[in-house]
Length: 466
Image 1 (cartoon, rainbow, N blue to C red):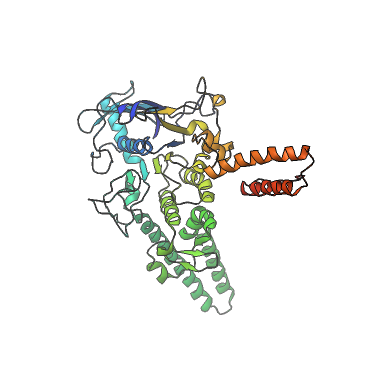
Image 2 (cartoon, rainbow, N blue to C red):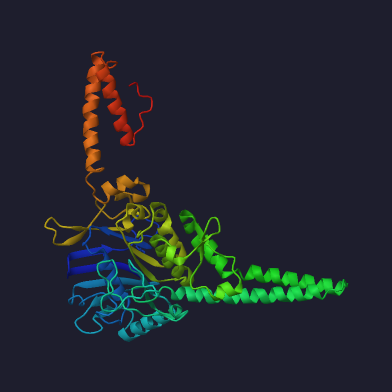
């Protein structure tokens, strides 16, 4: 399932918003749903609101006001989302009564056939939606229903502790209400089972070796068991090694951390959550993990474990508490963990934005009266790949801030003042040169000020003749 378009009319701050979520003309995937989308815009422009609305429509029969983060449904006619499942395209729009929305099915299907198709699809494809809010529900300290709110515009959460593995069979997984630690319990079961099987095979090999009397038949049996053990290891890689090598360690390396692998059966039985070590093999207790480390581990593990094939995946503020070097690769990591899914990100980070093609970016902008929000288009003429003004994947971070995030100044007030001062000094130095006074005490003082400002501004003077 993927979204191909959103239309909103008089819905909260969206007076008349239409978002095309397909690849533009000139692209190899022209007309197909975008694989990933990035919502950017000032606070209050509705980035999180769009994520919530998408979740509401994709979730189908869930109730208003409980987990869907919509205080009231959109008024009839104010919201429509276009979908595509395989080659089947359909629309979903809000109605007056429960379940608050209706379907506009394709002409070649009657209503009953389409509904049966959709029910069958939701049963077959699991999960169909995964939501990562700005703060994930963590079983160690579950929020209270009356007051618990995430950092993203007050998203209400309801504690719903899941039993191990229970999320694997869910169509809708929302980590504003579902406990993310449940996924670790599922992985832990796989680790325990693999380690138990490994110990059993090692024991058989050890028993055969201890009973040997040097006869050819014994040597043959030992060789057979050794080959059987090696074949089993090749066909059944350790789950903890897979998690470390294929998922976490490439990211944790930037934080000076790695997954702890060397554990006996007793350690695994007592393991509450994934164990981390620093590069010197010293254990790092969970309580000493940074906020960024927790955010990173708790978002990538579910994707690694669930391996969603056709899900809609919502991620609000993926940059939260992550250092820039991690931000630079996190979007690519998410997409590789769920290559067939469609991602929607909401961000304020130019580094996150640099991971997107220009047609994947939806910039939301207030009008002059700061009342209504519309989409700021970044192309002129037709929606063609050659008509876009800015290509964030090729821009410097400061260029992204100025050209895409509309940051007017190139630095702080002190930087602007220093630039003005530098311009004045350059003019005075040029005058001293013409008068042959650059070598004077006053001229050398100007030169020293000039070089000092250059260093503060991060400029290299190179072969300056001052």
